[in-house]
Length: 170
Image (cartoon, rainbow, N blue to C red; front, side, top):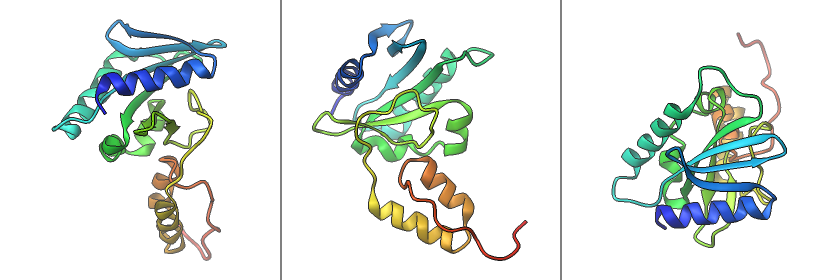
């Protein structure tokens, strides 16, 4: 899936949910607005240098951010399934602080949010969960690795909070 296909699928899904969508605005792939909210998105397709291209995509978004956060403004990276691993290399905590959501486009054209932030700019109709990762996250949590579980949960790979740790933890 190339970048143009990723952008087309993302725009179609946004429009289906009532967003006003423009492409190629001031070097941003997609700018969408609805009900006083803005979503600035950069997209990448499947390439031979996916990691480098995704790093470039994040840099492109960073250059478009203002000094102060604007109310109702979020940012997004949009990638095909084959590039998702590269997009998730930026830690979930960093993406959350920068208000960057990750969306994945399936070969079928379906778009899914892959971050679990309640503040995400847009929540497409269906959110795909990878149950293998969800099970791993729960196992990590059971072993006391809260940071690993938090990262997995923030990436939208599980939506079930494991039970709290027992004992004293500082």
